[in-house]
Amino acid sequence: MLRLVSFRQTASAKDAEVRERLEPVDPLAALGLAAVEGDREAQRTLIVALGPPLLRAVRGVLGLQHPEVEDTLQEAMTAVLSALPGFRGECQTVHFACRIAVQTAMNARRRAGYRLRYTPSAGPEELAELARDERTPADACAASARRELLRSLLDGLSLAQSEVLVLHTILGYSVDETARATRVPVNTVRSRLRAALSALRSRVHSDRALLEGLDVKP
Image (cartoon, rainbow, N blue to C red; front, side, top):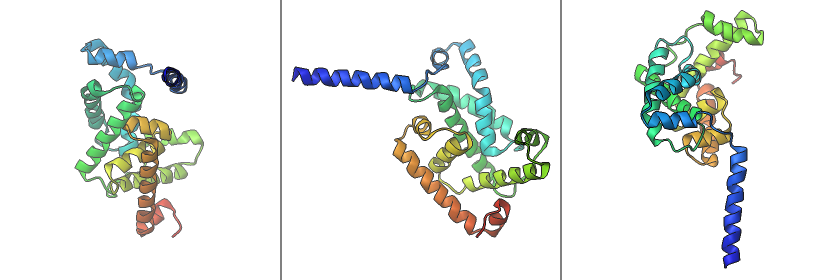
């Protein structure tokens, strides 16, 4: 019996070591802890460090030209600081924060009744980003319009489905990273992604305007 207990303890220790090697060190962990303890300078530094990824998450949901991007970003920053005491290090601090930003942006979309009526053409800022892949301005504008249509499709999904879809497909998180950020099993993430993609396919193929806008063959 003692040998069995010893073996289990050794196995658990090895598993922990493997997890540590596989999961990258969180560079913002210490800063987050100091922020939770009320260190105002740490809070400011943390928000500055999280600013770019939070902005990317908000823009990923709302789009670059949406008029509420800045307000939603500020709301997300406040929400991150409020939620920090409940963060237990299940994922990277930046992933934890970006999940909150995605949720905040999705709520902003729903409050505003954001649907296909808001599909602005790409502005100079968005075209500058799209130009990096050397597409023509016309192709860049078409790609921007398709992304706006896809964003509008998010409104028809449940919050859980749209959340994993944004984290995985727009922000580029792996399935494992998405699972840790959303605090659900990997298989649950996969199930939500399948359901979300299935719902999107059904919605696109039942709407001629979306078929034309996304250049999808019926």
